[in-house]
Image (cartoon, rainbow, N blue to C red):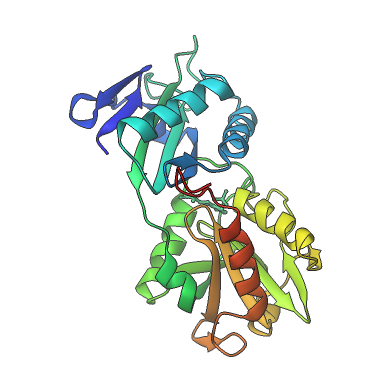
Length: 284
Ligand code: PDD
């Protein structure tokens, strides 16, 4: 996995360098995406790339490639690195310039970087479920932007991991928003709830897929926020992300959710999700 794409070309990781003046390094002044690859095939790549453009637009950054060019770069990375199952990481920063907070004037060329990484599906976790720790959401008010500025997320995840948990369940003023790197769903009396796609969460691509799957299999789904107190009372709880897919949450702060096992509806959604991921070449 050593072939990267940077400065308009593919190069071995050993041969590339990043400027210390990169605004991503100084300020986290950039945006990123993580695209899943299953069996050598890009999954929901257009949706991720469109969100990259949206995030960039929201911070007044221009992405130096078209959607089609980015698809080609990502596909080449899969091919050149012989990637089977894992992901493509891509990021764009506002470029290299003397450290001043305002945008460089005159503007400089944005830095676009992408690489491939092997990352097997988390099947063991998905089978038994994971635990989470509630953490206050102290992030800024533009969580809809997939920004490189992730300090709030980093600290929350670290706190969860130190407590032996897989993920942090973020709550703002007692209302569950999302995870440090995932979206949360709760199920009560057969209805699936998740926080609406406002400025307080990242509108996950997996979140959107799961909402579509709910509709397809006839599960009532409501974009309605629930409180932390309500989270403890849910019949089932799960989180979604590109790398976690549909991940059952079996305990919050050591308090069991439902029976403390992946719930029936969550399992149904896991099956529906698995049924639509790309199959190995030659098997379709
Ligand atoms: N994280 N919310 C946050 C804050 C996230 O960082 C992510 C993704 C999600 C889920 O989005 P999606 O379903 O599009 O992956 C929600 C990625 C995987 C990461 O930072 O590595």
